[in-house]
Image (cartoon, rainbow, N blue to C red; front, side, top):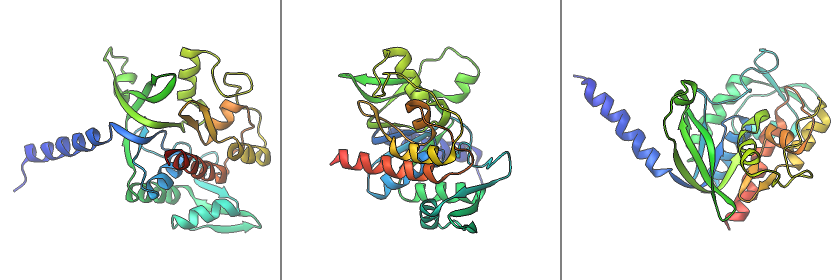
Amino acid sequence: MLDEIKITKAIIESYLKDFNKYLESDALICGAGPAGLSAGYYLAKAGVKVVILEKNLRPGGGLTGGGMMFNKIVVDEEGKEILTEFGVSCEKYEENYYVACALETLGALVYHTIKKGAKIFNLITVEDLLIHNEKVSGVVINWTSVILANLHIDPMTMRSKFVVDATGHGCELVKILEKKMGKVLFTTTGGIIGEKLMNAEMGEKFVIENTKEVYHNLFVCGMAVNAVFGGPRMGPIFSSMLLSGKKVAEIIKEKLK
């Protein structure tokens, strides 16, 4: 016989157990889009204690919308290699152009990232950064529902050795840092340069080349890279999102040594 209170207790106790375990981590990723999930997968694969925070109900960012609500994505040869690792089917369209189902891709990314050991918490919004000795040392969090309801409820904190802004075009963590600390970023201007007009070829390269540390212990990957460092957007091709996540994971793994 099922007991409603036992069901409730099982949810509360197991969630709080996980939440308490991940209040401190080696790497904390804000944003569970393709770049954030890729970063989490490769970090967890290497045995790094990694947590991913997603403010929305579902992970995926702009992935599931594909191009203008056609739920297909395009990747090149390098992107296809990563999708193959995740077990995602890719159909060759032309040389160096492969099409994949956006929903299958998201399902595979979430599944394999969790199975490798990364912990994903959805419906949590990062509203501030934790700073010690002029280095980012964690994030300040609240329930997304609290933010949406505009309730005056104090947030709490999570500590991490490294923090990754994978929030896409909004580069939300970097915006917080710039707003509160001024022109201290590792960009040519010291501030957020802003995303440029579309150019798929240049944009894809720019994302990967500029996936790096933007302030002490704070990294950017995915579309946040182009927004912060001033690269062109590239439209519904997702290779650089996956490769950027993999690259930031490699950088953090090296730093953890």
